Length: 358
Image (tube, rainbow, N blue to C red; front, side):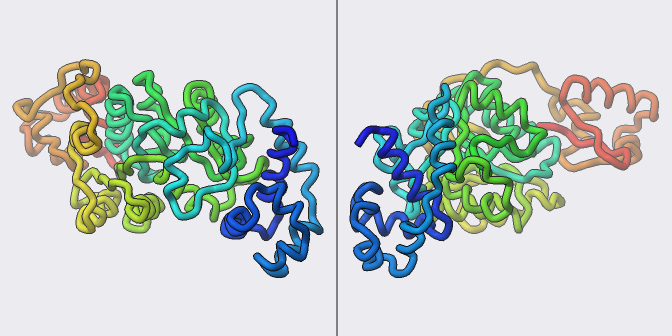
């Protein structure tokens, strides 16, 4: 049997509706490779999975198989099976590894030492900057940044890794031939060119809500640990953190303001035993990397000796509060706030408020 026929048998096993990952792995354990499953015949397969065997022999997803084989023939598009040497060994350690992975980009990155970074889709400006800066530093020290290509923290983590000239892997909840969300189209193309985009879902799979929590086990499974940047108490990022802990991965969380709803999920994780993180060096030391390697130098930032910067504190602050704290008149205050904004030191918020970016 040639390689295409072998892959076709894997695709047939994975594309039949009603035959999920657990059933697929049960059959593989009983018969070996997929071609042996189909060669064994209906009665033998019934002895392992009961009446579900009829689905295997009554439904042959020929158009989907042909489409997938054609997709995998294109440059930088790959389908990895559990039997492939290129299949990431870290996923073999988790309880439910996917039988197939569709990969756009560089499949070897799936086996590289990496850190998963996740967080809120509705992140604060400070959270986005924090995620991007952490990813830039960690990628600069050789860690592969793994995330889910969602809006917010995920996208910021991917951008930071790319900005550092590092590598990044996006694990998505749609087919690998789709771009979702549409606002991340350019970022998706950059990741496909310089990193890897991975999905366990068949080509053409739309953005179904149930698929996104499911793909989280792959995000954590590929990584040495998971860093949660910002998360509400009911955030999907906490699902990824829980899966990481169950898989024996490290869980890290960045604390935030006690007044921020997006810090409460991180605080909850820390109470449950996640490692509190203040700098990227905290993670590098924990994972055994060399924190002495310096990140690229950055422009000097104001310190708390600067009256306005000190008055801003770390929580959102209104213009009236700043005027009261500094004694500046409105014209002087607006001028200095504009300079800080232009230099990336603060961000304006709705309601005539400002927040320091640290």
